[in-house]
Length: 169
Image (cartoon, rainbow, N blue to C red; front, side, top):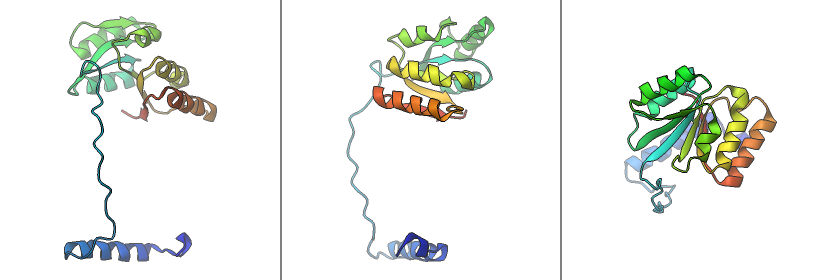
């Protein structure tokens, strides 16, 4: 049966039939593949240490949420405005390094990942630099405003085998 011949009604009927068969002990039509145990992946310190680039409205929300996660620690913050350095320290609740130059965070071997909450037109540059420095990345949406920037970011992530997640706080 082709995709075009498969109606919503037929889908629902077949789904209901499969669900009913499983409830009365009938044969299961789909068998799950066994899970393969993966080696435990973790940061060398068993704690994920991240740096945040951009402590404005979006970055403040991301930082507030991230520091509440177990096994996560904010190691440094970067923002062009000095007042936001103090804001980041207040959110984290302890002294930490701050800078105006995001590449200082990328050069820090103790930092495992980078949260990026900079203006949209800077996403590509900071993401590419971060993955090239061996950091995994969470970047605030939108990924980019141009297809070329998006392609460059994906290519950099694949080339360096780094994780890049684009999201919304």
